[in-house]
Amino acid sequence: RNPGLVYASISGFGQTGPLSSKGGYDIIAQGMSGIMLMTGMQGSRPVKVGIAMNDIAAGITTTYAVLGALVGRLRHGEGQYVETSLLEAGLAWTHWEFAAFFGAGERPTANGTRHRRSAPYQALRTQDGYVTVGANTDKLWRAFCQSVCDQPGWIDDPRFRTNSLRVANLDALEQTIEAVLTTRPTAHWVEKLDAAGIPGGPVYTYEQALSDPHVLARRMVVDIDHPVIGPMKNLGLPVKSSGALAAIRRPAPLLGEHSAEVLASIGIGAAELAELTAAGVVIDGRRQ
Image (cartoon, rainbow, N blue to C red):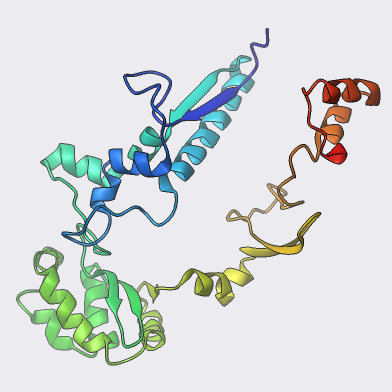
């Protein structure tokens, strides 16, 4: 009846296959996609990613699928149905692990904050917390040894001369670096890393992240007015644009809050709206 329609659905395991009728939550998909056994510290129990990773991955995947279908409709005049699942969307984000597994038979395991191929590329303990360090190239490693830690002898240490050696001796590397980093607070090391041109930063609590001056300058925390709550904070837009790509115009709606407004915009009159509301077809938030 409407060949130009683009519509989508998200489920736990997809619309086909032996598990298509199985229910699923984010944690179920994290477990079945192998993600929980490659998260956390070595030898630990399975660890769930701190955010609802598979849920969010499924939403993002569906968004670009819908946009792709809309481009297809503009080109060919036909819409289509797109669908994904929590399981597939999470698996699609395991690019490194997929390549290593099928290319070399490598089975990804929990590795804490360490990188599988580069070192040092992880969070390291300081006097008052942790700092992330990305000194994973030879140039950055030399600068880290000389300008940040004041330990030029590490450069010629036979255990750490190349990236592959540093990865092979990660336990010793971590202990060696942390013996120095734990003598000063995180802020000291971040300043030194920045001065040396080495990627690095503090490991924040969520509260600290939301109050960081840079995060605030980038308007990732905004003030909005809610019809019930009143003034409240909301996450800002992660995409900045030169044009009017997107804006936070209003808070999330109450159930049916905009029914009358939206239906009126497509020609539904007051009498017909009243009939639809009485029949339970439409929920009109103004009348609740």
